[in-house]
Image (cartoon, rainbow, N blue to C red; front, side):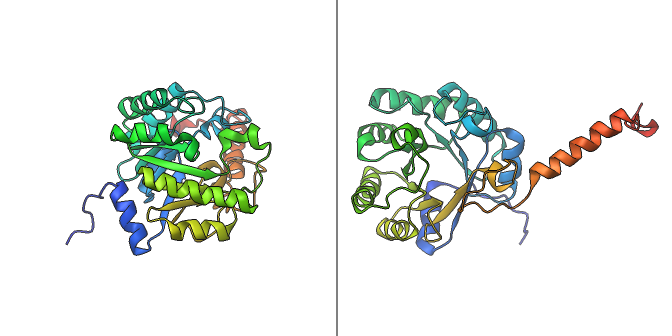
Length: 271
């Protein structure tokens, strides 16, 4: 049998099968065509077009400023590159909170205009109506609990969430509610590992952790962080797999030096 058979597209059903058999789910962010093509070819299960684009692509302090139009632009670029991975897109701040009709309209725009496969939303019972309305349109939804960056001004800090019993209990209730509503998975961000394990074991749907320990059904990181493109951002949960900042800086300095020294281009590099 040929080993070069066409790679099967990851679906929400396949993710569920992965949880059922104990296979971990790999998820990374991407925001443009070239990076997404590399991530997809490397065997990624899920590509998240995160509203973290607001930080790493646009230089904003928070995720709040990014617009729905901008998310659609980034998502469209990623979808054109992804041949295997499931592409999940963050609904940006202000596009779904408090208004289920607007939430449905936002999700439909993302799906129609970008070609993405699912959307992700931050929050629990307080956004249940919006989630339900989106799901009734046949759009898959991934939840997001724990540290929810769109609520950073409410929290006032990026510290670990749900350390106290009351908040931990609410998170567990929210997770079960998201499953009951029909979400296909839940991101758990920056919560105690013990709590993340309890939630993961209590749910039949997959959990994806970021700063939530090793017992979630999968893991997600921001690609600029794990590749070391961002300088100085090194939280405990981040494992850097490369030091691309220095690698790229050295290459660019060498290019500048060659241009200044008149050694680039040489005779063989011309026509």
